[in-house]
Length: 192
Image (cartoon, rainbow, N blue to C red; front, side):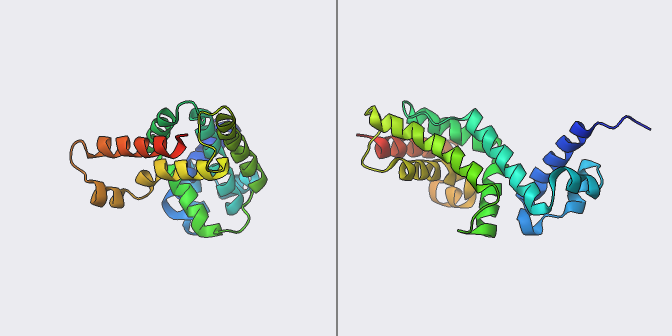
């Protein structure tokens, strides 16, 4: 019998959960499929991560932290930040799917681990507010609203690829043109 490695098992469960929740959402995800994919038993999932809703919250929290570390808000280079954000979501489409599923499941109700999420966004808003205070970003729009608008602008092309294809095209060069348009819109949105 092989040596047990709890950390490797947790990592396999986590990756299987990311895939399962991104495909099926919270309600549609099945712990037995996660266990099968992770080559772990269901009892270990519950022992390591709690119930299904808690597992989803942990998955989303870790994915959000990865995004925050990988693509910090940069008020001094909004167009570059939008570029990096779009690149991140192209490479990690599961995060936006997880956020979309969360929105469908919880709507405007309080989220599990919401206080941690609020802290996450407070830091991002503070960066934009600092840019406003220094005069590099408009203060005509409150910093929290501005962050919401910028992320929506950058993320929507990945969230609804069918709409992107229908409205902006799918031929060679269309994605580059749309990206340039998104960056120009972001630049205008933050302009003083």
